[in-house]
Amino acid sequence: MIYHTLLFSLAVIAAIWAVMARNLLTSAIMLALVSVCASLLLFNFNAPWAAVFELSVCAGLITVLFISGVSLIRASTSTTAEKMTYLKVLPLALGIFGIAAWFYLPPFFAELAGWKYTAAEAGPIGKVLWELRRPDLLGQIAMLAAGVFVIKSVFPKRRTVK
Amino acid sequence: MDKGLLAYLLIPLFTAVVIPFAARRRAKLADILANVTLLAGLANLAWLVLRPSVIADGFTSVPGDGLSILLVGLIYLVALCVTFFSAEFLPEEMPNRSAYYSLIMVSVAAMCGVVTTSDFFTLYVFIEVLAVTSFALITTDDSRAGVEGALKYFFLTFPASALIMIGISLLLLTLGSLSYDSLRLVMASGIPSGPVVFGMALITLGFLIKSGVVPFHAWTPDAYQGAYAPVSAHLGGIVTKISGVYAVLKISTLMNFAEGMAPGLSGGIMFLGMLSIAVGALAALKQKDFKRMLAFSSISQVGYIILAAGLGTPLAIIGAIFHLVNHATFKTVLFLNSASLEKSAGTTDMEKLGGMEHSMPWTSWTSVIALLSTAGVPPLSGFWSKLLIILALWQYGFKTYAVLALLFSIVTLAYFMLMQKKVFFGKKSAASERSPEVSCALLTPVIVMSAVIVAVGLLFPYFYSYVWMVAERIFL
Image 1: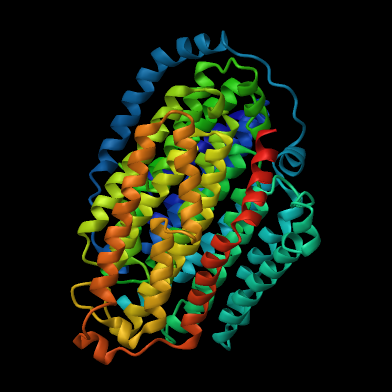
Image 2 (image 1 turned 90 degrees about the vertical axis):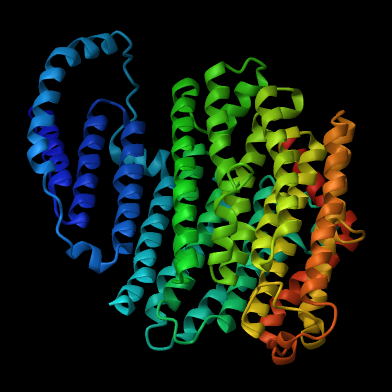
């Protein structure tokens, strides 16, 4: 239970950080951290497939895409002052969501629990990754290599733009 | 995953990582490493498939389903032409030259992953790698058109990925597995459940968007026109075929369209295929830019493959695979020729060119071979594939589609002849006076590909027996 609470808390902190961060790169990394937490939780709930997909798609692939996107943004645009009004709106939005969740989420989860079925034990994460989804790992390595080369290909242009 | 072909995925990936380190001091090493890797792979594949003993056996000793190895060979061939051409074409002072070659090699590895996998999720992962590398390759040309093309590619193909992902989730929910075999078993049982078909429909829609089929074709002309010409050849020649068309073809065989399974989905795919043939051909007639015209021509030719995939009978699948191979060869020739024109005359605007045949005879005559094959003129390779597709349509009672496909083949010939007349034939223009024929290094890949077009056309019985073997393995 402490493990779950820790992971949930970490996910929430990382998610808020992702929204609040001024640096887009930090946002992307925090978002990846949210995905990693979610993935570990899914694993603990006996849903290894969902966990592996979450880890590979959200933590791996989407992060690479975000980082590539951030690298494409010209240096000049990041120097302009940001509108920080959302900083005031965010606590309000969180408050409203919290109150609504208090009322609606417990019955929603209760209804979902009626549909639940216990997933079969697929073994530890290493087994799932190495024995069941090995080709995906290869794909992830290719994706990481692609991400590195995308950034390498785009950055020389930024120097010439300056 | 076909483990026998794993090396064709791993070696380019390894080369991609090595290139930036090796080319740090000598930029030329990047060209050499990329070309040598692809050439070695191609030689190895030729040894596996084209030995006299293998041909004499009717290709029975070819490993796997035969389709994967054929497509891996095609990927290597087109990529080799592109890298060989790029070595001479790209500016010497290009700052991201090694990254360019690494991206091509990762893209080759990803395409090999796509054609060798037997699981929908792995397919998705490799398709995404391909999308990211394609996006970066289009931006290699940092002109405004290049960046615009890349952004359009990004905004139109990533929603397609979302659709594929939702489809995969539905499939996992209803089927409990994502392997091709489990889908084949469910379809063979004759009672496919609604959610399975719906999930597959979403996945197919995603791949149709990635194929650039009408009405999802908005990104294709801009991406092809905006990118460096060798990149356009890489994208138009092989990447869109593997990242979209191949998957539709695979889904068609897995879902057993030939037996009348999921008739709504099959009919829809056929309709979109026909629409692409028509819209692509009519739009190509109006184009003034050579590369843009080739992009619309690609949309039209992809339509033929999609139309045949929608039908799904063994003959249609043979025609579709054959046309996919042919399209890769003739579109590579035409895109590389557009690159030669750009290099020599400085433009691909057909209004400004004219009489280029006098100064660029090799470029002109290889274009003639490729365009005649695209239009389906015998005995070139394109004729046979179109004939098979039209025969398959006629055989199963789709006579209107068959007649329309034939008619638009004539339109294809019309727009290509107009292009040839405007650009190459006729009196010498100012552009042709100052544009010499390109160097031998730029002509070699084009001549090799043209020779492949002629050879496949003339040696059709051998190629047919190979594709027939593939169809037998897929359907039995």
